[in-house]
Length: 178
Image 1 (tube, one colour):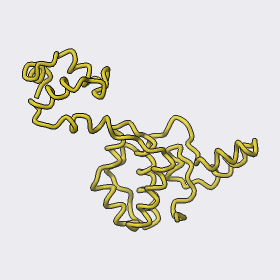
Image 2 (spheres, one colour; image 1 turned 60 degrees about the horizontal axis):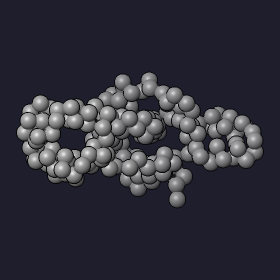
Image 3 (cartoon, rainbow, N blue to C red; image 1 turned 180 degrees about the vertical axis):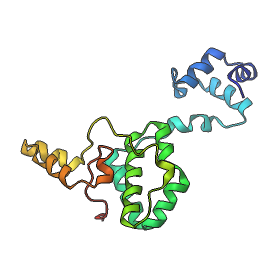
């Protein structure tokens, strides 16, 4: 459905619809009436209109821990199959959750290497991407601050898994999860 047609069928101004679609206006800030009027011609619930904006981004350390636990629980190959089939990497890219997308890609590439498998070609366009700054584990940052020394960061860089470091993510241990 075009924005023009949605405006005509919902009674919501085309300007408001354009502002929502462009991100200028957060849909969570719309009135209940506006949400209801938009939901009706689209044939969806108000909740489904709000779904993407309601999803909360977990702390990156929690995300990393969850991924490592998934690898442990599922096993390397089943995890790789799930990542490829679920399209989670591109889903995170679409949300602009770049750390999560590149961490998951790095994990997939690492597990491929560890299991003697070629990396999945569907992610080739993402492999050259790097985060703008280096992302260190929280524990390394805390130790570095406590010691007032860069040595913990330098050591973690030396021990980093190459697939993660390619994206400016410092990760050296993905198997040792409790």
